[in-house]
Image 1 (cartoon, rainbow, N blue to C red):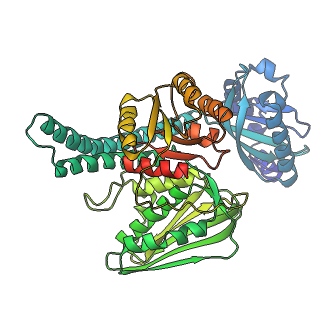
Image 2: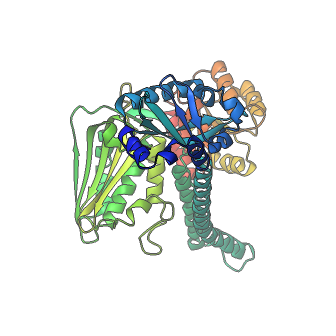
Image 3: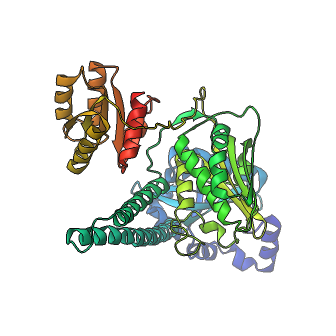
Length: 515
C-alpha cells in the first residue's frame, strides 16, 4: 500500500488513474484475499467481495456493520488492542485467531494488520484475512496419515513378536498333547520363556502408551540410583567404569520406584551396548531451573524447577538422522535378536506418565546423554522399598481370592494350599462379600482383582474395610490403570501385583502383604 509521499507521486504521474474511484474500487474487488479497512474510530470503512464471501454477509449488511460483529467478545478485545498498537507504532502485526461468520460459526484465520496513511486523513488499519480452514484440514489429514502409519508399524512389530511367541507355545504344547514329544524340562522351559517374553512385551507396550499402573510415592531420586549401583555394575560388566554423582539437598520426586528403576536399567543397558570396548558411564542427579527460553516452545517442556537424572556414556554416539527416531517403538539399531526396539519407547512412556520429559544429546564417536526432567514432589520422602529375601515362601494365613477368570482362580486355588495357605474363592463382588461375611474372623488377606462383575472392586474394598479394618489387601490386574492410579492413590500402603505373575511372585507378594 502507498504512504502519503508515494500516493502524491503516483497521483502526479497519472492523475486520471489514481483519481478514478470506480477503477480503484473495481481493482480492490478483484483481489482474492479478503480484507477490510478499519478507521481510528473502529468504523468499517472498506472491504472487498472476498471478505463478503468469507463472512457470508451481503454488502448491504456490511455497510451497517461494526468490526466487532466478526469476532467473539474476548477476541475483539484483543483485536482492539492490536489495532491501537498498530496505529501508534506503525508496525505490522500478524496473528492467528477465529473469525465469526453470519451463520454463527467460526473460521480459523490468519490476520495481518498494517497501518496506512493518506493525504489529509487520519491513519487507518488494513486487516488482511487468510482462511486457514483448508490448511488446518490438510494438517489434520497429514497427522492422521502419520498416526495410522505409526499404528501400522506398531501393529506389525507386535504381530511379529507375538507370532513367534505363540508359535513356540502352540507348537510345543500340541506336540506334548499328541504324544509326539514327552513333557520334559527343556520343552517346559521353552514354553515358560516364551510366555515370559510375551508378558514383557505387553508390559513394554503399556509403558509406551502411558497406561502403566503406577504406585506413586514421594521418594528421593538419588537414593534410587545409589540403591541400584550394585545391579548396574553387574549388568554393564568390568570394562565399563561406573560413576554416580548427585548434588546435596535435592528435592524429592513423586514417582513409582520400580518404574524409575526400570528406566535407569534400560538406559544403562543401552549405554553398555554402545560401549563394546569399554568406557565410562556416569549417573548423575541434579537440580535445574528452566525458563521460557530454555523450553524452546516445546509443548512437552514447561518452565520451572526440576530434578534431573542424567545417564551419560562415552560410547559410539547416535547419528543426527537417527536421533529423532530413538523413542519410536520397534526402532532399533541392534542386530537381529539383540533387542526388541521397545526399551527406549518404554522409557519415554514411563517418563511421560511421571509428567516429566527427556532430552537427548549425542555426538558420533564421543557418546550420548539422556537427561530426564522430573517435577519435584511435595511431602516427606518415604523409605525405599527393598525386596525381602525369604528362604521359604510358605505361610499359614487364610486368603480370600476374588477373581472372575476361572483359569486364574483355579491356578491360585491349586498353588496356595501347597504353600500352607487356607483359601476361599469368589468369582464376583457379591459372592466375595457373602464369603467374607461368613468367614471374616478368619480371613487375613484379600487377593482382589481390579475388574470384577456384580459390585466393583472399589465397593468390595470399602465394604470389607468397614467390616474389618485390619484385613490386608493385595490387588491384581492385567490392565486398569485408572482404577489403581486414581481410586487407591490416597492409600500409599496398598500393594499391587501386575498380571501375568508367576507363583513365586505371588507367594512373595503375599508374604510382603502379611508382614
